[in-house]
Image (cartoon, rainbow, N blue to C red):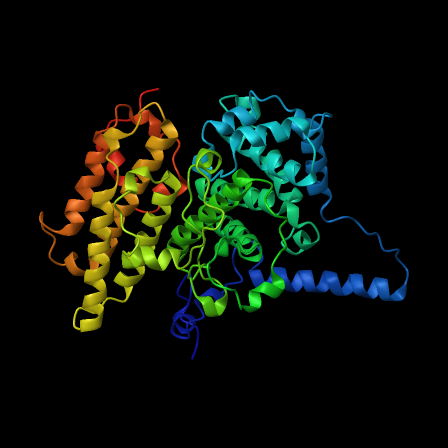
Length: 456
């Protein structure tokens, strides 16, 4: 049939679902097809010249502009002094004040002593990432303007997991750097890059066998053949850093696997070599003052918690990191169960009720917000996060049940209001100006809108 002349696309092209290909030759400029035909003719002529050998070929660097920008950034932002000689005022000091929110699990004083000597390639790798975060958190506009240069340097210095097999002693520092980078990207709403570095940290933790530290069972998995051979810890504090490092990575994996819609890497499956036997983490100072007995062996750490066999009686004496790991377990478990909950299936109902009771017992055992030393900003932020994750576990679990019949007596309503009440118990909301990046993903940021903006 003939073209009906309708614009911008004729009826025949619209009917054939080819509207994007409909073009008229009476426009102000060449059509897309005409432009493409001109390009083809130009390229064919160039090929003919090159084939005849009459014109020399001039090569150029397609990345010349990028290389020039990189050299400029290095010349502008990279002083001639070694990285570890940067002033603490805009590097370590800015970072240390909020280190726990970005997943720093090393002993801060021991780390500061090590960085003062500036020895070790893995230390410089970690320092590159810390200076990046220091620039991000700095109040100095000139320093913040250099953040992209710090990011480029930090990323270029990170080794591959395979490269660590030749230097397993660097694994913990590199794993720490990957955790910090993951949280840096998450805090900048760059989730894909955050997931990438989370997976890198998980790979190091699994290869280093950090998930089976002090395991009571004899390992028989294929993972042994690919494991790093970490040197024995020099003391109980270094062992504690490794334990706390594992649980920090575990929390990242559990939380952000939900946000990304993927399965967690730590599946707690012995057949896959991901069983979790490592004991719950303590505050780092306790590894020096009250270390684990030398003969302590543990197993089924996560499964025992979910089953309730390890109890919650001493929750107030547990570390913030241990409580946060448990809250993450419940949050992830509630979200996954809710996604497949079948109210007409008895087994599904039983699993639902069991997890619901476990969450409620955990919440009741948590220390109260007002009981936390308000001068300890890190402890306050951590406890708020723990309570919020636990309440969100209730919300996630009960959403399929109450989404059609919400009421003031529903578990979701009660959990949401409990989270708001916890915020109201804070003496100064400015303590929440820097929080764990996951706070903005797990429905924890909404209650903040009930309050006026933070004062300057």
